[in-house]
Image 1 (cartoon, each protein chain N blue to C red):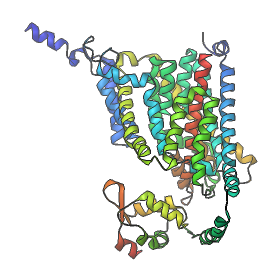
Image 2 (cartoon, chains in turn purple, blue; image 1 turned 90 degrees about the vertical axis):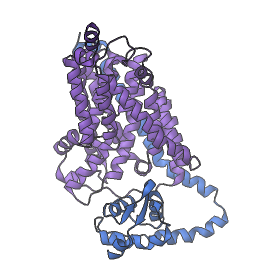
Image 3 (cartoon, one colour; image 1 turned 45 degrees about the vertical axis):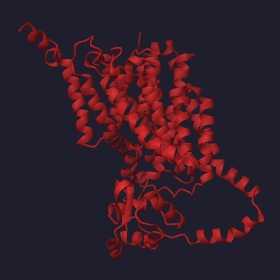
Image 4 (spheres, chains in turn brown, blue; image 1 turned 135 degrees about the vertical axis):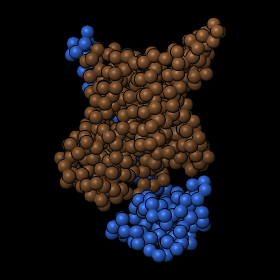
Length: 375
Length: 142
């Protein structure tokens, strides 16, 4: 009998408290949103299931939990803490990305820069709320709307915040269809949303081949701390464009990025153990994340409108919203919003140009913030 | 400590302004350089051009002057007419990237969007391993 009682006292049913139940509900919601609503399922399903796994209560000391040394989850989590998975994801992203639309209209790159203002606004907001500078920088990078970049920077500056930052970042990326459209409608008129963009010029193979080399040199000389991200991004793109490494590019954009996404999502989810995750700081991070994302979207749109004051050939200000680096969610949302105003207005390719420059911009910002914090 | 005093204490304003300026400058410079890239490439291509290359130029002109037009991107009939001549040029099943390259070479306007529309209309039918075939009766019926 005593043995039975001892066994029961070690089960999850006995050890569970309200924090585990809250997190299990969050995990369940993520899985539901991913599967039923198809909100970024490739991210939300692994993260959601990871949250479920991470919040099964267990007897501490068995070497089971993600924060316990020698556990399997702990070893898998090393790739997150050391910033390995984000770099691998950037390699795959580079091998997937076609920069042709960006090369055809380079001025759209400025919208990718403008949308990064959300990062700096959130940096100030987080400092205002009393976050330590390294924590503030980690929270601010959520404004870049780039999950891997957020995890990478947080792993370097404030590893104890990886869980909340990653969950906030990925949640807002998944909620793009909810967050961005109201801001787009609020900041643009119907006439502006109907502006048609001219067909981009054809980009030669040589241009596409030279771009990753020029891009990596220029951006990494500017922010060397971004080498693990931008170096891999442009390397992946060179594999895609050079034409002699198609097998490597194919592996990078399929098996490699998929494996990294699965392990990253799952372990980040599992790192949200209720007892370490549910703190007032996590709630603040979620609020600041929403502010960061909204401000980034708004600053991109407003900058596009400012550009229009000086341009002969006006650009559709909706494209500014695609300057955040949530690829390809925000580009798709911009495209859909353009179609709603004018069924013949196809903005997808142009929005992808802003989106890909947003990826570069947010990685540069991560490098800049890391450098600031080291100095 | 928190509020503006905390921001000042940690040099927050300077970090935010400097950070924003650096990323803007960096992307502006990159944007300028890539806007000149095609000119630089053309310059080097001209430099290395040989007389035999000059002879082939009229052919290039001929193909670009034949640029096809599409009035309405949602007009399935018009899109299908543009793609009908390509049917025999691709062995089935084929990858969409191969069709895209062919459409580009044939100057079909908006190849990415028109191919997407053909897929949605099931004129392009998905097979195993990301390969596609034409639904010939459907294509002929448009």
